[in-house]
Length: 339
Image: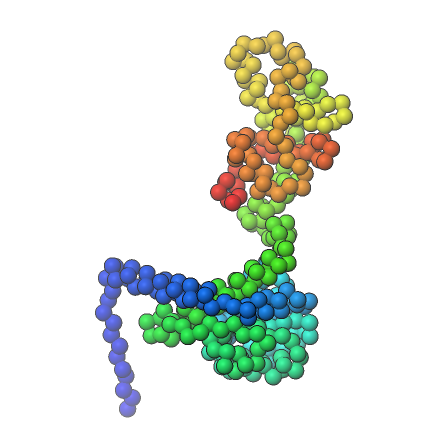
C-alpha cells in the first residue's frame, strides 16, 4: 500500500507574491554579480578558440541548459559567428556527423555529469575538436574533458525546492552572451554586418540603407534652379504621393537647394505674389542638409529628428540627387529607436 505524502502551501497574499518575486530576481542578480567577479583568463582562452574557429561553433546541452544553448547559438550566429545547436541525445544517434574537424564545441551543463552530454565526450576527443565547457565544477567529467572550462561555481537555484534550473540557467545565458559579444567585437562586427543578417521586421527596417526606403528620383520633384516658381509648380507632376519638397539643381545636375510647400505658403502669407515669376533660386533653401546614398537609415532618421525637418535629399558622391526621404514614409521609426 503506497503512502501519498501531502504537501500543503499556504496561499500567498499579493504582497507576499511581490516580495517572493523580488527575492527571486535578487538571488539571480547577485549570482550574476559574483559570476562577473570570477571571470578570468579562462574566458579569454575560450574567446580565442571561438575567434580562431574556421568552421562552426557547435553548441550543445540537455534540458534547460540545452534551451539556453539554443539561444546562445542564435546570438553567436546573429553577431557574426557561424553556429548551430546540436541536441546531445540526437547526436549519439547520428547527428555527430554534423561536427567537422575545423569546428569547436560549446557545451553547457551545470552538473557536468549529464549522461547525454558525457556520452559525447569520447567521440569529440577522437575528433580533436576544441571543447569549451560552461559548468558548475571544473572537476566534473565535462570540466576535465574540456579544452577550456568556465566554472559557474555553486549556485543557489531560485526555485523554492532548490531544484528547478533558474539561477544556473540565468548564469549560463549571461556567460554565453558575453562569449558571443566579445567574440563579435574581436571580429569587428559592425552595424552594416548586423543589418545584413537582420533584413526583416522593424529591426531590419531600422538597419537598412536610405536607398531601400527613399522615394526614387522618378517619384521626386526635381527642377532647375533657374526656373520660376510658377513654372516649377505648373509643370512638375509625379505619380504617387507627392512629397512636400522640390529639389533644385544647377546645370551640372548637382543639388543646390530645396523649395518646400511651406516656402510657397510663406510667400502668399507675406503677399509676395510677384516672386512666383522670379527664379526659384531666390526663394529656395540654399545648401540643404543631405545624406549620402548608402548611408544607414537610422542615421538619417536621427538627422530628421535632430534638425526637425520633414524632407532629406539623398545625393551621390558628386552631389547629384538620387532620391528623397520623406518623414511620412518613416514615421514608425521614432528617435528613441535610433539609439
